[in-house]
Length: 91
Image (cartoon, rainbow, N blue to C red; front, side):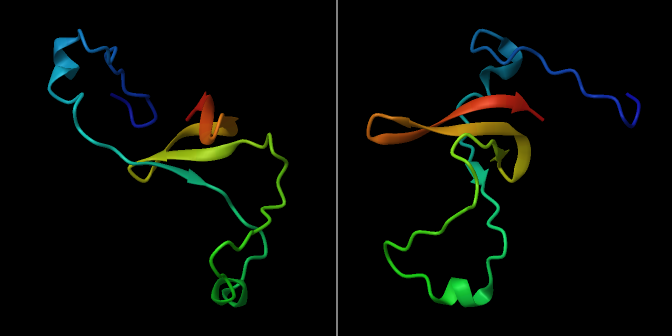
């Protein structure tokens, strides 16, 4: 494989024997919301129920990380009483 070449990944379906042993492994999904001009002073003033303005439109895409690595971008949505995300682009 060349240095800049994207690795080929097998279809990670549960029926694919190559993935069968790894499908149960837990992973952590994180969303990165950059807050412009956020300072240490802002941090120490945070209290329970504080609201921090991200200065972003609701439909702005945010970074999605899996175990600390960027995997794509998503839009946050309301799913009834829950917060959900719609994956819009893979990294």
